[in-house]
Image (cartoon, rainbow, N blue to C red; front, top):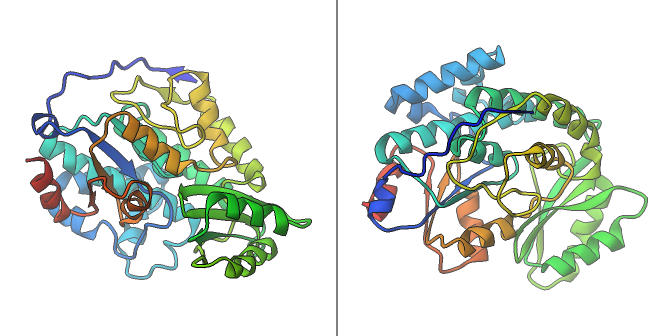
Length: 330
């Protein structure tokens, strides 16, 4: 690990600060992608076009073509999905910074989105983060044979109820709680036969339902150990800068510190559950009174309503939604 020692800029004055809002930023992860993503961004912003072109150069293939295509099959492959969501989120962040010079009080990202948060905070540089994500996506995609593993969100059951179902239905397979997204939403992950048993068991819980996720592997479980090892090797040479603002880590729900623990947290994240509910609570405890989701989709905005019903939020997923954001902070 190389510490670059870039000083954090805590003196920036933003529109949000001027409006006396305490802003928390959330970045989405895999699953928020959609065919044709970034089309409106590259048409509206020169910086977005440059960022997408830079991503093509770093990756060595035309990610831009995959993102802009209306055929979503190629985009659904983990090796393409993760870079695509990251690049889309970073293009939006650049657009927001160009307009507002934001200085949040804290940020967090869901799974892959944690890299977006670390780049926004200045801990990672865009090019290095994208290269790390490329390694992460490839190794996660290859960690288990296709068609053997999967994930499902259990909605409407409590955390304890889901954990009881996991313990009761694991059998001889790997089955673990992967994402603690909200008080009534926990994602289970593991071998498909065990995930299916949980889906069947959830039918006995009033108002509970299970939704299969469009992934072909068991993310955030012990089955991702090969990916953790590949990621740890890549992270040995990572350069880290001092954060401009705190970033809550998925693994601990506490702010990252720029030392050896940061590298370990990034590597361990693929085998440990995402403590998203706790990350949101950490941002609330820090004083956040406005949450902005920066990236494709509205998944995190929806989860926020389940965690803190009265919290104010806005999602920025394209140039037009910047106007909605401006109306809240202007």
